[in-house]
Amino acid sequence: MGSSAHVIVVGGHPGLPARARDRLRELEAMWSRFLATSEVSRLSSASGERLTVSSETRLLVTRAIEGHRFTRGRFDATVLPAVVAAGYDRSFDSMAGRSAAMSTNAVMLGSEGIEVDDVAGTVRLPHGVAFDPGGIGKGLAADLVAAELLERGASGVCVNVGGDLRVAGEPPDGEVWRVDVDDPRGGPSLGVVALTDGAVATSSRAKRRWVTPDGVEHHHLIEPITGASAATSVLAATVVASEGWRAEVLAKVAFLDGMSRSSATGLPWLDRLGIGALVVHEGGVVQNERWKRYAIGSPMAPRAA
Image (cartoon, rainbow, N blue to C red; front, side, top):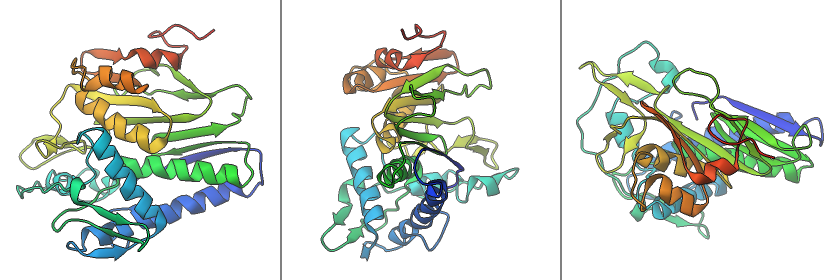
């Protein structure tokens, strides 16, 4: 999925970290859009036909549909053609030092038309629609691996896949899991999030950005309404949620709408959902009320008692 991973296992059999590594490799082989043999790549190439896929891939697609529905379309996993059109047509590591060509092809979104049949074990994308698990794949991978490690005897786990992090069970110090929040501007940590069980995810344009031959900078966070890299002053958005896949979906919303003051979107909406959110923009940092429940040791929030 174009990312590195870091796993911490507390207790359990000494072979559990190796099992976590192998499991992440299995999910990578199923879900990477950069592998032509992956189930995700095969789905995007199936031209509207039903394709038999694993239970893990069916769950991934189902979660993406759920994310699209509860965000009212602000999250959409079918923006892959838009990402490619903007120039992100290969793994980001292979883009280093190179400009990216930009396409003007029309982009077709189609989350509403995806069909998942768990009885038959199939998924069908509408004709012309392509699926990119992107961040939701990393978040869900963290969820799955964390749950499996606990089932195999770990007393506590932290699974971090490319910055999408899931913690559960006993932390190493026996108190809470502490997660540093990086500053996308390169400054010191913005603070520490304390969790007993939950997930943290960040959406940022600070790293995955590139310049097309016309000299215009683009990034991988697509505005579904326009099909282009989101034009925003937001640099990064971090959220705290119950699960990794959900945190990733809502981090996208916080990135796209983090500066909105509307009660129907942005930080007020996330507050009502019980989601902590912190948004870094070109002029500073903002956070919602829920974030203060998790932030400790930060100049932006009182230290927890």
